[in-house]
Image (cartoon, rainbow, N blue to C red):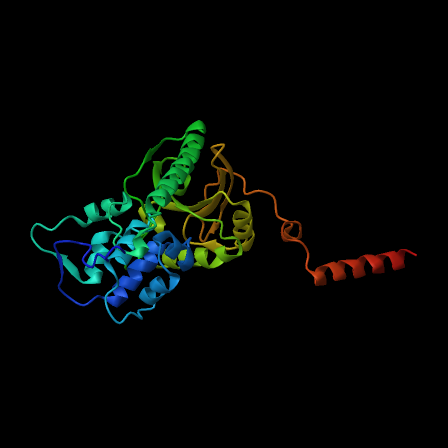
Length: 314
């Protein structure tokens, strides 16, 4: 006999208003994070992409299933600060006296004790969050060990705010209070994970630029660094922004987390008279034809040029 669906997942919560579709869409996009596609996020949540697409495009005619809301909370990007409480409020639910904590409900789901719908049978959140936490720790230890070896002081800042926004702040995976950036009169260094986005990395960085244009992290004494292990993503971005300048203190860092080693850091030029601190080299310029190969037109152009040179030599 098929398991019956659990309609009211959050016992002790009642519907007090219609769902705020706009707010729910915004929270879902924040939970997805910058480094994941909607398809990847849906896969992590164990739901169809169309389910999340209807939420973010505000196409649902009624409330979403409670389990979908729970999975969004469970699989939210750790830096998004999206909580189950915020999602339930946007979902239109409020607790009555004696209601079970929604975080307890999430814990039950994570431990496999609640599988009320087909969408809940796959619960990848625990594994995903563990992997993210382990990666963040490797990244943090890489930077921490390197800076300490160089003789700088540092301590972990509990405030992970990297860039302040008009409505939502952007949070780092870790922030150090350090004297490494004193020549720039900065005392905080915030690190944001940059996935292996390759050619799709440009719009991601542009969004950060937009946020920093509205509020410069320098006002909080902060440098913002995108940290990655993907060399192609790093060198693509470095070459894209090689001659650009912005008011903020901003960099992109390439590391080898398995070796706990910082390989390169590209620090963008700061507008004005402030010279940014550069502790690591940015790496050699890249011959992209060696990375991606030459197009047929490029090959033909090169062959024609070589043929012409040979004819002139004769």
